[in-house]
Length: 94
Image 1 (cartoon, helix red, strand yellow):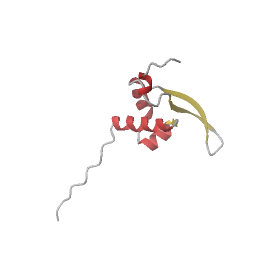
Image 2 (spheres, one colour):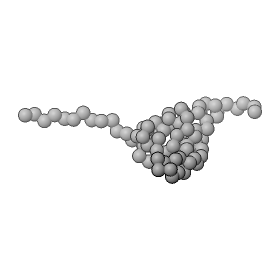
Image 3 (cartoon, rainbow, N blue to C red):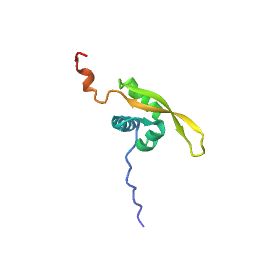
Image 4 (tube, rainbow, N blue to C red):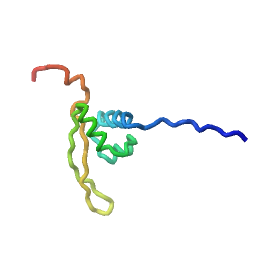
């Protein structure tokens, strides 16, 4: 009997998580729970903080999210304000 080497899985590192979150936010606002699930990011708040430090304009809006038992949770909704960073480089008159 010969041992087989398992196929290595791609590592979901911090850089991959940040890229996935940025791509997701380009599609529209998202809650932290959605980012955890859709972007495989265990700590999306840390990744949002890092993206902001890189210069991405991400706003936090607080929304009420109803639960099945009738209670309501207040959750963060993350909104990417500038979807294309090239727009920031243009010096257009307003």
